Amino acid sequence: MKRYLPFVKSDPLVAVLRLQGVISSGGRGGSGLNDAALAPMIERAFSRGKPDAVALVINSPGGSPVQSSLIAARIRRLADEKEIPVHAFVEDVAASGGYWLACAADEIWVDASSIIGSIGVISAGFGFHEFIARHGIERRVHTAGKSKSMLDPFQPEKKADITRLKALQDQIHQSFVTHVTDRRGARLAEGADLFTGDIWVGQGGVDLGLADGIGHMVPNMKAIFGDKVKFRTYDPKRSLWQRLGARAVSELADTIEERALWAQYGL
Image 1: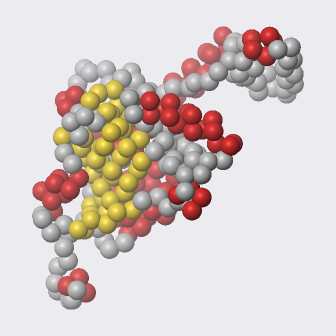
Image 2 (image 1 turned 60 degrees about the vertical axis):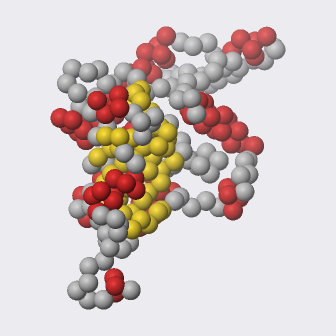
Image 3 (image 1 turned 90 degrees about the vertical axis):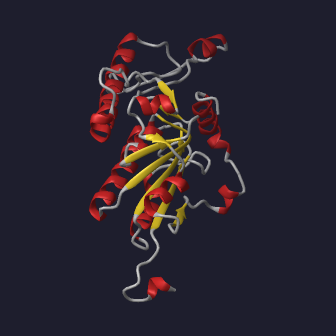
């Protein structure tokens, strides 16, 4: 009741945003993260009840660089507008796009066994041209514009396509590097090559300045705001169809890709 009484200070409040799953423009079976789906949740977390801080609980192997950028930018915009500090707490992994999200926080905390980093860009696919040739299948492609069939998985890989892809990846990689250096600044270890796509565990990431320390959300927030701190958790809302674990046949490829991303980190 005391929060409704004049001149009586309410207990500190921390809004908790759970960011778990692969980052993608779609939902990837209901478990993915994207800006359009997260926007209402993020807005509520920064506005409802005038929180003293926002805690990001992150468990993500990455995914779309654009969605990572959009989500992180939304968090930073609201944090700056409302002057609310943001703390990130990494669970199993915050790698690639997951680490992009973590860098939206003012401080990053990891478990001793958390995996962080993977500051790089990857593109993967399959080549089917030999398979379809063996089965007497003819691939017919007609384009206006010579680059429209770039990296067609049903045609032999072309050196020019690979060169073009690497140039695009370099641009995205530089955006990632800029985001990390802007957010982490002087905390990054001098002389360390942090942007090769390598990963680190727990204290190794702290030693390089990729994280600020080993710590978990509740004890850290209590250490800052006192034992009476309250937590209000915000999770992405999913439909009944998603909560029942249903998967459309058309999402099978996305589900396989999601498992492959997690598998890179032994999860």
